[in-house]
Every structure is written in structure tokens, then in C-alpha cells.
Amino acid sequence: MSETTGRPNGSWQDRVAFSREAGGVAYRPGEVFVRAIDAERTEGILERERGVSSGSFLRFATEIDPVATVQDLRLEGIPAQLNHVLFSHCYCCGPHPAAVWGASAGDPFWANPFRANPFRANPFRANSFTANPFRANPAEEGLQAAGRNEHSARPASPPALPVFRGRVGERTKPSIVVLDTGLAGGSLRPHALRGLADDPVHAEYPDEDQDGRIDPVAGHGTFIAGLIERIAPGCELSVNGVLGGHGDADEISVADALEALIDPDTGAGPDLVNLSFGGYALGEMERLAQAVRRLQAAGTIVVASAGNDSTCRPSFPAALPGVVSVGALGPDGPATFTNYGEWVRACAPGVGIVSTFFTSWTPQGGGNSYEEWVSWSGTSFAAPAVVGALARCMRDGLSGPEAVKHLLEDPALLRWPELGTVVNATPCWQIDPP
Image: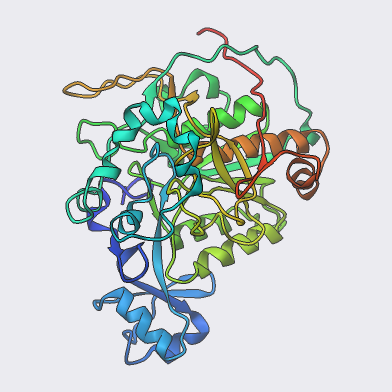
């Protein structure tokens, strides 16, 4: 964990465990949690010492295998949970790190119908992403063991778009919070986002583990903020850090961060929250579900990316009730990596998307140099397109539920089977030259 931000720092090999037996899930080793009202019943399985409080749950440290501990507790009728780990959805066709179990074990979920149709032959399949090490490494020796991946964004030229010079009235400024890696700090903040408020606690930098290489997910929050700002300029937009530069966060930390968005005086939450990350669960993610329910009750529309694993398996938080779950489209239809299913409510462009990045970054010893703009792919970047489109509707005077109904539920709208309503919001601006 970073001493300054409290976010995960460095590769995840020491803080993430994976379980084939639990269905290919990732979790924090040595941690389980139970409802506070069930804590007395854990005697003899968990230590008597109380855990750390999170919502109405208590987190316990255990020296016993957490998966076995959870299974033992459930046999006793105690609905225990792993502290699941969620990962950013930006790996350009590479799956959630736990999903290599499915690929290597013949998981029936690994049969996305989109993978067998003509979209497989489009130019996207012929680029360098097809050789992503996620596809080549066995679980024992690959990504899970290494705990890091190379950065998948590529340098790009600024988009050629008209300059937005309009004004947004104070009463019609939707408030948007992105829970992610934070926002580029100091002089690394791209010019297009200089108008956003500075917050040192949530600042992100390219090489937070100081190994001379850009962190695999560095710039993720900055990229997403640029997408939303291009689609719905002038909203009250902030980016809070919960993911580290390697893209992971645990269920309890995410849930606590979500509940912290609720104003303790008014009980209101922001209008929109973007969550471009997710994971799979041993059963459910009850603590995360509780936090999402509380935030929704506070009036917030929660939007989450569906995942990049080519699977119909529900990913959380996207698959939670009421969440606007978003899959990805490519130039010729569904992106070959997108998750899909009846639980996916919307889809938006997610292949080769161009947005804001650090003003500059040159790695030690060679590699890609970045300046201001990059191209990136993943359902991570489809979700903020829907957030921006919803914000436009709200800026025009609709409430959050009205905006969702207008944008996603009108029967006249175009829908893609198992990917929901197609959303393709046109960006509004281009930065003035510095």
C-alpha cells in the first residue's frame, strides 16, 4: 500500500491469491469477512479477536486458507465472504487475471458467441493485442505469478474535434465521481483537464512503484476523466483513487470508498459514479452489493464496465441490481473481448479509444514515450461513454432515473443481443493548442 494514498502499490503477487476451486476468483490472502451479527458464531473457526469494521461486516485476519475458512463457515450456516479482488478492465483483450483458470480448465463460459463470428476476422484481431501475454502464459508461470503486466495504451495524436466554448448553468451541472487510479498530478495533468480540482490525496503518477517503468494501469483514471469531459463538458467531475497503478483493489476498500461518497449531512450521493473495474465472486460480493445499494438509495446512478473476458459469467459490480453495466463495441460490432449476457444493459465503443494521458512520460531503458494522448481498449472505456451520455441528459434537465430510461429503455433504441442498448455519444471538444 502507498503510504501517501493508501492505494495498492507495486505488483500484486504478494497481496492477491487465486483459486481454481473457488471458480477462478481473486482474493486478498489471509482475509475473510462476516456480518457483524454473525461474529459471535465464528468462535472456533475464526480467532476470537474482532476484525476491522466495514459497513455491517467485520473483516478478520486468518492464518487458515480463506477459501477453506469460508466454506467451513458456510457449512455452519454463517454466510462468510472472501475479500474479493477487482481489476481494471483496460487490458486490450486480456482477461481478468483470475480468468486464466477458465481458459486453461475448459471453462464453458469461454465460449462467447462473438468469438466465432466474422468479427474475429476484423483488423483488430490482426494487431499486436492478439499476442497479449494473457493468452500465452500458463497460470503457474504467467500473469498470476508475475503480478504485473506491461502497459497496453499506445501513443496517439490529439483527436480533431471542434472546440467547446459553451457554458453549463450551475443548476444543471451533474456531479460525477470516477473511482479509479486517481487523476494525473502536478505538471503531469493534461491540458484538457487542467480545469478539474487538484486533490493531492487522489493524484496519480506514472511510476508509483519506482521501478523505472510505467505502471501497467497508470493513467487509467486520467484517460476516463478525459472521455467524460469530452462527451459532457462542464460537469462537476472528480476522480478518486482506489485502484493502484497495477489495477487492483479489494472489495472492502471499494465498498468503503463508495459509501464515503454519501454526504453525511444531506444523505445525498453524486449524480453518477463510474466504476471501470470488476471481478468474479465465490457466490456473491455481499459487502460491495451493500455499498452499491446504499449509494443508489442516496440517488446515485452507478455505471460499471462488464469486463474483458469474453464470458457470460456475471462480473461484479456490473452485474449487481440496478447498476448500468456496459459492454464494448469495436469498429464492426461487438468487441471480441467483451463480456456479455442478459445482465449487460448497454454497450458503447471500447476499441482504439483516444483520450487524455500524462503530459509526458519517457521510460528508463527504452519503450513507449507518451505525450498527452493515447489510444486504449477495453470495457473500461465503454462505461465512461455511457456516463457522459447520461450526464448530457441530466444537464438537459432529466433526473438520473429519467436519463437512464431515456438513454437505455426506449423501445425504439438500437439493441445488440446480450449487450443491451447501443450508446454512441459524440464528443464535444478539442483542447486549444498550449
